[in-house]
Length: 348
Image (cartoon, rainbow, N blue to C red; front, side, top):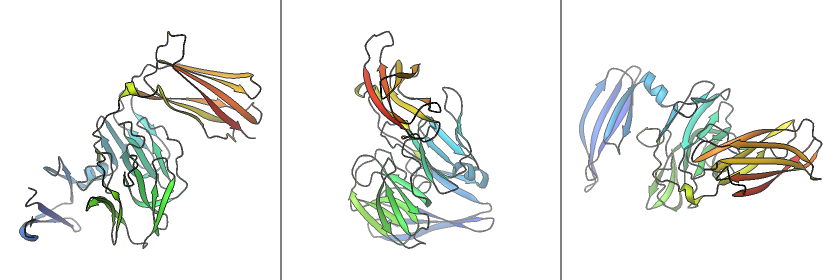
């Protein structure tokens, strides 16, 4: 209600009803005063928005759909028993990831491009990451199985968000970096669940059922955070990114690689992440310099985009291959604006 006298609403759930009690907290005196109580004759679930100024009570079915969704400016994602769906990707219709059986989903901007990425834990407890086009990010899934809530925020002061989750047996808290590498392990009780990330005395803190773990000084994440089970303490499941990136100041190619690498099957994928190019080309050569394959693409989408090509190695011998990448900001130009050599190992 106000900073000096905020209201505290307590929802108690019974079989087919909810009891809502309201208290007022006097910050000056540290006292609570009872304001009233009401009984709701159905199961409803609160969602708060606009800094707790707006409250919605969702019925059970609506809440079920809401709790399996992620919202961000211009993006919305949902899950069902076997799929993750980008429900408003407008360039070429819906995008779907099938056959992953998601059990938990959250939104976070891992690479700080002001576009939401998705973290998805599947039914086998593996954690994968996808960009806004639902293309899997490199280094995922991570090598550790996890359980319970997953939180994400920059708590170590390195600009990028960390990923926080409980171990498969719930005996430890794992802290991963934005690329899925394990940074730290904290031993905990098995029934000590992750609750939220918050700020206490200007320090980033992980709050669990029984403990508070303190980390580096608080840094404003500008909305790039998922600090409780449903995103924030208002259950909004909203990733509210409050920063932008300047396309003109970034390289025309932000990342280029082949995965998996080394390739031990009949093929891999060459992936190029670009920023406002008009033309990209990849030529693959063997170690002796003989030409193997050419890939090219006229890029028609503005902003950050991702191009992937399948690299068929079924007829290639084991060895080292070199993919020569060139990208142009102007397709009519004879000179490339960016070039890179991608080294690819093939093992059979």
